[in-house]
View 1 (cartoon, helix red, strand yellow):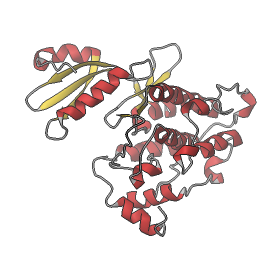
View 2 (cartoon, rainbow, N blue to C red):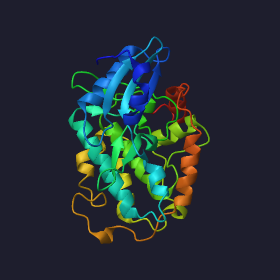
View 3 (cartoon, one colour):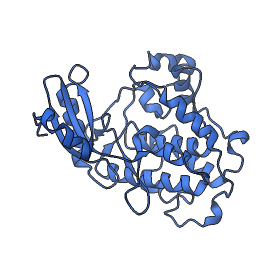
View 4 (cartoon, rainbow, N blue to C red):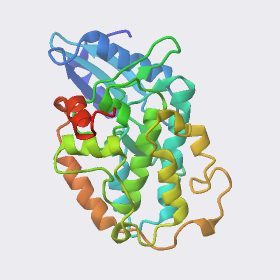
Length: 297
């Protein structure tokens, strides 16, 4: 990465073309921010936020990123009616973005609603993935364990257990995202982050009628096929795109429910997520999960 130093003089021009991500040098090492910049350049595509420039000051590192239109969830609840077919469309878009990343052997590792933006500039609205601070380049020769920070709602079991991650870690998060978009509720959420982690590792979720009434069986089948405890049993992003509900395998309109989804719960979900601060590691989660599951991990 080529770090420029004239940020103050370029600031007003930069704000016209992009958004600036400020990173304090006290919070992250320069190599970590350079790693994110390198990955962004490597996976450049229509479905990934573009890195426009990089700057350095005595106290901050700045990544200049293209401006995005808004978050996926905000976009979906802004419409009068949210239909299952639209949810399937955006899940498909997200999977296609992941397919590209995974072809580059890059795992995002922090896929959650806040990191999925909607690009309204193209003829058909599409998704753009943002925030590659946790992303990693995977190699066949290196097992990579990732530290879970903050809220675990969208985290796969391997992030909680501290076992090696893979591209299928992202696929789990797509399953949780689909569940949330269809119901407006979180499948594993509990009173505390620690209890949420236990639910994830136990695969403790279901499809309550009060939240899934009117949701098609095909949609529930997709979620179940993706939220698998064993990463090796999860389908790849490419395989997910062939699932009848997602639609690239040739879906028929009749497979989608024609009942509008309840966006009231989704709005509540968005408001709750806005209160979160993903900054602290979940305390001794591996020990807590092991004891609560009878040391079966």
